[in-house]
Image (cartoon, rainbow, N blue to C red; front, side, top):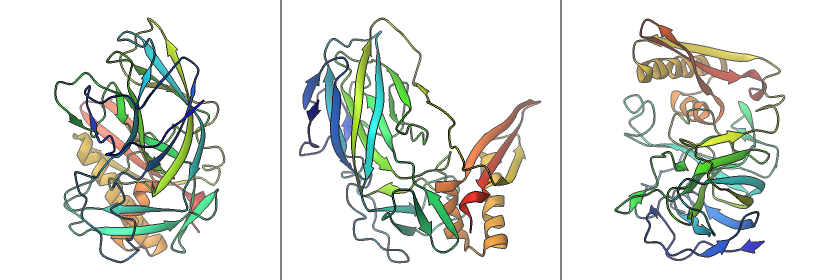
Length: 309
């Protein structure tokens, strides 16, 4: 088992030019500590206060790259999270021009979470969100000619923001370059499927342990993962509030479903629209309910009643 820290300056761009911070073999366990996706820009931000601008030169600091000995294109790297230990605070924010509803929310808005309970965390006095830590970024280095931003993801993994990649799950990634050159980052405490306001509960920091295995000559077209049991046991037991968007465009259907959920949260729970938008990003799941009805998409937004007070 090998322990390392994020090098200085942090690895912030996918590039084949990065030197590995260490080399590991099949079955080794890597320990790391990672910072939030803002690179510390929001450390002093508070609920209701000013929201600092994101600095593109600071965002997405990653731990790595880690060279997997013997890995080559045509192989698969398996990543098995063994332990995630969140820090004691996090943030969720919307920014102008970003997220699913940029035309609805022209002003920045932020909520700072207190994570003094390893099981759940409060959103005002309206909701209590289960804590299920995971990494938003787990990837191998893509085969790129020039340094490339961490966003967006690709068949190499990267900024997948899949909230089911928790401890107990296993992620499989197709190797793109010799050595795989793994990287980890973007720690989250909780997220809804869709991450609609462009942020989850972004953790100020998180420590983790991941076991790495190498599968030779096992080509896959893109990321795949397994879970060890139910995705969110107990969370759905009380039922759901659900809203739907129905139209011929996937994005518009998604937007309509979320707008209807924001309206529901205001009507039923008294949340202001900007706060409801943040809550949707960390607790509401977007699902494609239908795609085969003559070009019309149906997208549903699911809010588990169990998280609401």
